[in-house]
Figure 1: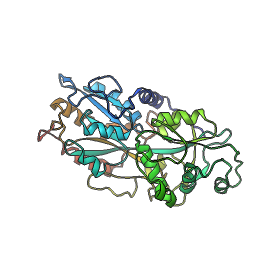
Figure 2: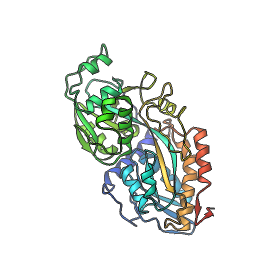
Figure 3: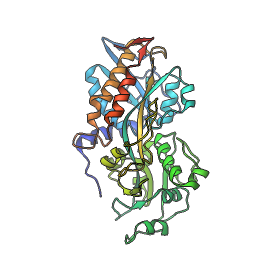
Figure 4: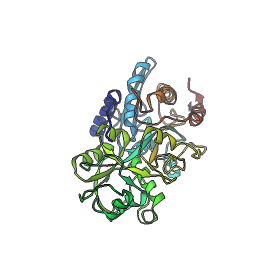
Length: 376
């Protein structure tokens, strides 16, 4: 099944793709540029009750922040976001060269110890990581399970009519086209989610490769950012790549129905993405994971995405105006911003937060301070 692009989300996704193409891929971002898609110092300029916030990180979340920036600009907050990958975003927050980071995996203890103070992570949305393919004449819905995808990414399954794929798709005429594996080349939250799914479902993958924002790939072609993987899949007949759903929709990709923990083969619809949040454990620091959710009907490769900021931005070097801007941004993201998600008309193709998680986010937001005092 191919997807009709919704015009309202198309502009936001296209803008995010442009940012991803133009953004820096270096390990740190440039201070003080102040232009859209750039990262700047946490002492970002502000005047007259207005503030400029600079962030970097997750490419999965880039279309969301691009959309939200257009609304916040009318509320006195200029939001610049550089989609350089979750790993670089966290590294930039650790040096306080950005005011916030976008990260798909939850923070590790080692991430927190390198920060300039206590940080808060706020889950803001859920996005499906599709297993997209470029296979002429084949629609969306090829059935794949974790071990089969793992064998493809280990180079053990080399053609689309391999017996392992055919056994999952009886009656389907599959071509003998060679499979070209495409993976991320940068430090990526999308990679962390994808490889966690493979490690959870395939013991051989877990033992030999594991899961992280960067892994040692046994085979394939590397490309930077979701946009880079999408471009490589689009240009290569027989290619397979893991691509966040917004990028898959923008490129009119076809993608697999993936076997979930309940034994169902599930497409990455918004409904199935939302289902992944059902029944998950919510730790005190809100560092949730929706990968391989046990919920019935859940798409199994759903990544949460976090907005990460200092609990006291001023102690990390931000001005009081910037601290106020961060709180205003988060208040919008956890409130009205959620209404821009859901995949419907004029909505982005991400699942919004369930109310129980939104409540915990807002309780955490109330603990944010500037030099120890509440932020007004």
